Length: 68
Image (cartoon, rainbow, N blue to C red):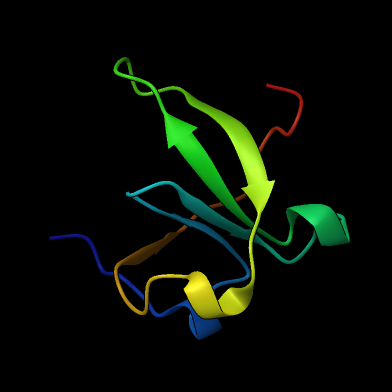
């Protein structure tokens, strides 16, 4: 089973229900909520407040390509 984290432990990461944290991105992309299509593509990001992020179940990653 993959190790998961709380949002306070994430510099760059995602949650399977469509949230991303990227503390290296612009302020508008710091915390975002995405729609996930049936084929697994993430689209239509919207900035969100830290308080709405899920409290557990986060995965770390190396970074995101914000142009796709």
